[in-house]
Amino acid sequence: MNLWLIPFFPLIGFFLNGLLGRRLSKPLVNLIAVGSVAASFVCVLVVLSKLWPIDNTYTEHYFTWIQSGFLQIGFDQMLDRLTAVMLLIVTGVGLIIHIYSIGYMAHEGGYYRFFSYLNLFMFFMLLLVLAANLLVVFVGWEGVGLCSYLLVGFYFREDWATNAGNKAFIVNRVGDFGFSLGIFLAVATFHTLDFGKMAAALQGMPAEVGFGALTLIALLLFVGATGKSAQIPLYVWLPDAMAGPTPVSALIHAATMVTAGVYMIARMSFLYNHAPAASEVVAVIGVATAVFAATIGLTQNDIKKVYAYSTISQLGYMFLGVGVGAYSTGIFHLMTHAFFKALLFLGAGSVIHGLGGEQDLRHMGGLRKAMPITFVTLLCGSLSISGFPGFAGFFSKDSILLAAYGHAPWMFWVGAITAGMTAFYVFRAFFLAFFGTYRGHHHPHESPAVMTLPLVVLALLATFGGFINIPEFLSRSYPLGYQENVGRMAISAGFGILGILLAYVMYVAKPALADTVKNAFGAVYTLIFNKYYIDEIYQAAIVKPLEGISRFVLWHGVDEGVIDFGMVNGMAHLVRGWGSLFRRMQSGSIRNYATWVLAGSLLVIFVLGLVGGGR
Image (cartoon, rainbow, N blue to C red; front, side, top):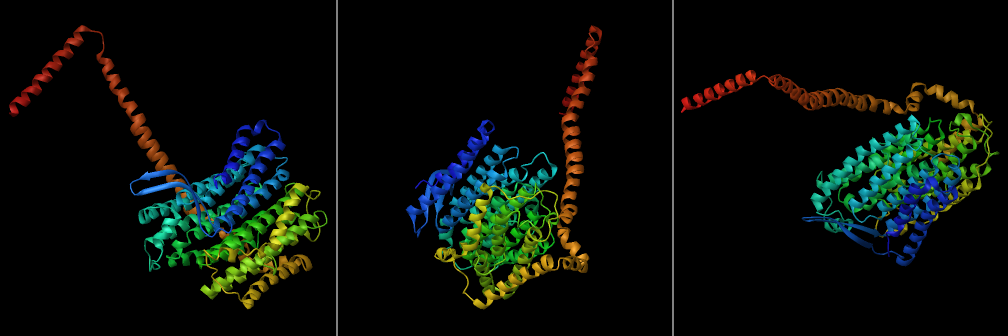
């Protein structure tokens, strides 16, 4: 079936544009970058048409990668229903964003470099999704992290961009350390990293009671997921990652890479089903992250930061779903989120493009007349993420909340209230951008067709994508985890509608009310506006102490004191000192040489006498 062709095309695009792009015209760079992703998308459709309806797992073995004792790890790829959904999301949404990028990046420097990085990301993401074992997953996992670093720091001449790239890279290394420990422990426990073999080993076994090896493996893998998917406490890199070009925010930091942690847990569902304590941690961290990030989103003025915190919050919903065992609903929300969040970020990019780079909502307003297509499409995205009845986000979000209610009712209520906050801050951004009077300094204009047509396609998906019955499609392998309840769906939808109405009152009908509310909350508003000072706390409690240890202990103490002075320079001083002494002995005087010979002879006789006397 040649599954390897799916990631192969973007890899070729990366090499062609990366090595030759500087000498190629922009149309040719576009053809290579977009054409390679389009070829992958077509390849996915061909493979799925041949294997449909995918009742069994199809695996391809290419070569044995590691052979050592009991451990044999192949470079293998697999296709099942979960893989099929992820392949369609990655290649489909990826293709749309690549097309959009042609217009958005048209006047940016490093044009070919941007598309080569984007193609490299597609290669690693597809490799991650197709992997048949944890080690191949880890290669893709690290690869998408590398591409995130390269693209977040794309404007490498600016300190704010390089700092954001470094932050994303370092924070993810913390999570990946836990992920790698989980892989090592999985090898020691299962003697394999193959998904099918690990699942077979657990088949028929009871769930682990207490804290054992399975729970520890699951928790360590989840540490990696908290980094990659920006959950508490490793979420802090994602808002800063908005320093990269907006298409990067849409593709990597909304639709695909950041959902890799959710995908990994769904893929490892056989493990989490046998480690209920770990699953409970996943669910609790997910719901906590959802509400925590939503509160911060209430106060942000940078349009991309608003959507960044909503991404963190929505990822929390996904982890809530997979944490309570409703894996299919978590993946369902992953799919709808890819539609509406890619739309929101690309819509924000259209606004930024039309305003000459402006991102501050306080310098926008009244844009619906100047940017009608962006206005309508962003409205669809905003309604979808708010869970408005009939839109894609409504079906997937409510599926998760219904599953959560069956697991623990308090999780449902926290999730429903968070849905209301989400609707409020997303429509706050929408109303500040498109209603009222224009408060900016640039002449607003609509984006070109190469940018607006992708918005239209994503708007259709964000509106009608909920009718794609992903939960039923995945239910053969992953349980639905809930029973439909109209009353509870009405409650969660009601919170969303209430949030929209409240945002309308505060930012359209009575805009002075917003300042009144802000002043009324005073210190609380300041605390939330400053993101609970979490970055400052990390800086004071972790970064500064590590810098101090590095500076005074490792640099001055170990490097300069031990290595330089004690070993390198110290050895040089020692050799130089002895050399100076011996140099004085080389006087050229025969009388001096005879004296040294006599002294040496007497010393030898004395030593021999001592040795002989000892006998």
